[in-house]
Image 1: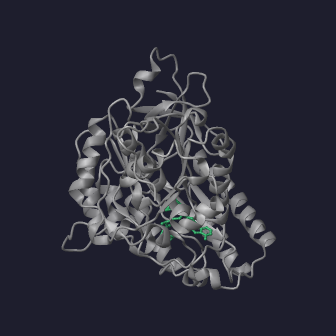
Image 2 (image 1 turned 60 degrees about the horizontal axis):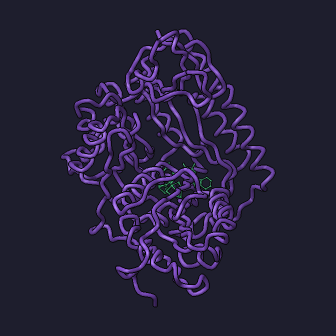
Image 3 (image 1 turned 45 degrees about the vertical axis):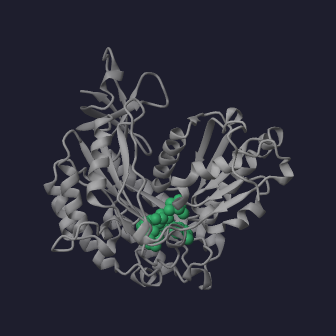
Length: 464
Ligand code: SAH
Ligand code: SF4
Ligand code: F3S
């Protein structure tokens, strides 16, 4: 065993480059990594060539996501060969799932760490960076994937700083997931569900607002199962929304991801009652066939889901809806698949995320005979996407000619002086500043924008 760096040894690496895949939990985690590393003397860099530490934060939700993350590590191999003192770390869900095995699979990786190890990242890195003088083949390589017990779990508070903060912020309200959707790896990689205490959530929202954020998205894998308060009617998530909505200075509130099994009437009613809650709901349905939903262990039927959508539309008739769809689940027949298409036609989501099922290690569905051949999965995926393209075009089309409040997030990526922001319904808008002398001054403001055109996934507009 090598000992930690002695006081006389060269200082720790100074610059960190982070590449991340996956969901908003991973985005949130990356922000926390940057903060813990910053407190121990690291600066961010956008250039892997000048980094002393490279972190790849991985996702294992589907086979493809996992491959993408692993091949990202391969891109840094040459750099690592050129500069053996460079530390290469892999975090996130693949790291948690594979642990030590990942050190064997990627022999040039120094550190593998799971999501519960972020608070201790500086210690792990400190231990490894003390080995610069040690010949490469003798260096210590470490996998840390201990999961913190539910009772002992402490959420790592965000430390937003003015100048560093974007207009929109993510605030985590829970970690892990206690559901057992038969196809899903998340309960394995993120562990049991823990609800973050409401006072921590509120304090974090206040810190973000004080640092310049104007919109907050509360995140968790199943936010409707939030149980951090103990309200008499048991609907802690509805209560949390009410409290966050009242934070002074906050302009907009969103949340994701909801699970239909836990989605209540009271949360649906919040869309009518809470002034800052945006008219957008992401409610993953996965399939339009009750038979498939049962095999997925989703614990709701097509009819129950449709009823929830009716509650939401009653509270907020023009709400934007989005969902996740899995096609080609084991046992999905052509008829089941047609049920998914008919559900899309009936509900008319503004946008969807659709995936071909892929088996994940250790999940119950892994052992179901996968009787939908890959070519058929692709055909179904394409059919879903083609249908949704028409629906999205119609849904975006309804916005043209309207004047909508848009929160300006920044300058558009595609340049020519345009601004970008989102409608309450979560549609991205590229905005012509219409002769405004200092468009940048509008960043962070909620301004009226007249929608002039609908593109494939976004809107175009002009300042009114
Ligand atoms: N907690 C959220 C979703 C998390 S994962 C929820 O319950 O809805 C995001 C999406 O990935 C899921 O909604 C599902 O559509 C998709 N997904 C998860 N596991 C998958 C698998 N094994 N194959 C294909 N898609 C999957
Ligand atoms: Fe996965 Fe289901 Fe939990 Fe979502 S609710 S993270 S799909 S197990
Ligand atoms: Fe991926 Fe893990 Fe999120 S598997 S979707 S990064 S919780």
